[in-house]
Image (cartoon, rainbow over all chains, first blue to last red; front, side):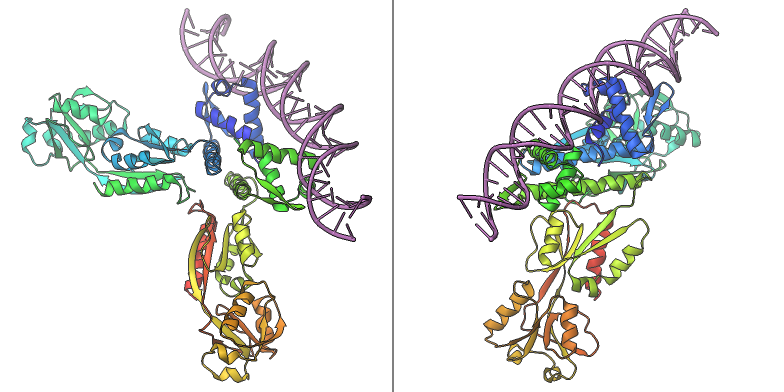
Length: 288
Length: 288
DNA sequence: GTCGATCATCACGCCAGACTATAGACCATC
DNA sequence: GATGGTCTATAGTCTGGCGTGATGATCGAC
């Protein structure tokens, strides 16, 4: 059997990617923790992390072991709960802000109110959602993806189009739908460079040779739409969003639709609350 | 985290229900093992076993912990397999002889031939199948039950009637079906007293006030039918059985049909080979 | 009542693991 | 490219926890 102290140490290490900080968290000396991880590595016979520049990163095997360790930890908590002692287990959901605000309201409300379930929510971007699931930090994740990831259980819940959100009196508000050329020389509210949505917009507008101007950079659909409503510019967002007062939305069919996936870790038992949450999340998309 | 050495010790203890023998199996002294189990009990805060007369038995909590420990052990083996090191995990199926002989042939053949799966079969009676699943000794079980058990995931696969098996030239072989009075003063091949099937027969025949004679007591449907074919008497068996050469079978509608259940431990992930085996078992019943 | 078997506890010795100290690796800055 | 800072990795020392042998406690069988 794999030594549980070593697994516990590896959880701390895998979460911090630093022997020093992980040791602090465990109230242990850094060498002690290092030896624990070394023993675990030796026991499993596979390198669990590698040096990359100044820092460290988990290998694929390390990610698998981290996820395994967290799973085992959760199972042990569940056992303690079943035996009547110990706290109730926590169910962790990772999703983007938009999904949390506009789609998952009903599932979250239902499970949060349930006795015996301790729900935690991680607001993460696409990469963060995937990382949270891969390492077992979350049991359920919802995010937009171009393709379902390997190593995770993914169910496509919906494909959503893009909408242009603008102040009610905007000149483009008279149109039924917005074509890309309509956006020429418009002031757009966009996320910072590097965010998937920004890159997507950049590419699409460049391909259509549409010149545009940056009104303001903002992160988070709620924020973007708020400034759009105030007349700062046009925000291109996902049509799961609920448009705020003072703004109107018009579809932009030329932008490729996004597929939303509900993700769980493989090996999830059907009786787990996480399975119920995943199913409710899918239903919430469908009922939209 | 629960100490894994203690869990491993508890597996040995739970399987032997003897500190002395479990300690031998682990190449450990009896006091050392006793302390391990005591520490585990203290950690979990619930008694895991109790004294009953001279021997010991597991409490419900103890059974749950034993099953949990075995599950965890299996998961760790699966992790090692996934990492490329370690042996392939074993899948344990517990079922009665008849089911194994006549129904599960195809599922067993398919999974046994699969690379990466190490199939083990436990031939057990009804109580043994249930015990093997409750304590995690088996992942999949198939048996006849009057009612699905609590604490286990049960799917009713089929309800089967009873047939009377007799030598081809037997006087009752001329009938299409056999009523209970037809069996009056016949010589029957029956299992020993205490077996569910024997008790069931005793009650049914007594209720119909049918006197009968015991030809021979035998355990196992294959054996019973063999002697029926040889003219020793009439064997009342389940209609899943394939009648041997030289014998004929006639339905006995008056005997209550049996419901066969495919059992798995709750919390089984859908990707587990055990889930596939369970589904194939259900399909095998339906395809009969 | 006595004996045999097995669980449960005690006292002692020893090794796994934790700690301090320090060498090694890597990057940043000058 | 030299220096210093930060963090990982290793060596040596020591202590607490675990295993062992001895023995008490308990139950059933004869």
